[in-house]
Length: 133
Image (cartoon, rainbow, N blue to C red; front, side, top):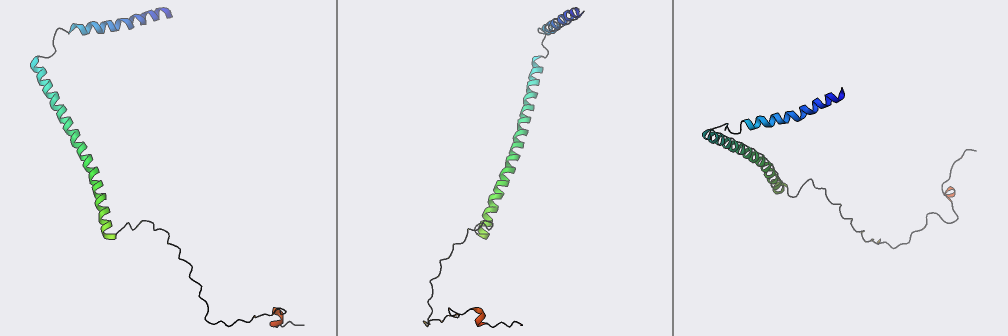
């Protein structure tokens, strides 16, 4: 049973391209269009191609002009800001330079200072504390 179905399908698969090939040869001798109709068709096709090319060129030119406008606007804005404000005001400033240490100034009075606490004294001896007994 399966073998018969396979043979029928194979014959159909081989027969269909033969029918298509035979039908294509039937109309080879008869031209579909006259010479004048072909000229009109070619002329119409060339007009449509020209219209399409012009439309695409116009679309590309508009996209290019939009891009150029944005670039020119950015350049003009940058130049105007530089003229008005000087350098870029948003630029991060560099770290300031650390100043040098100043020279030590010697005191004008050369009198030696006496120590506040002598060697054998303690704070308790100098400041009396009152403790209740």
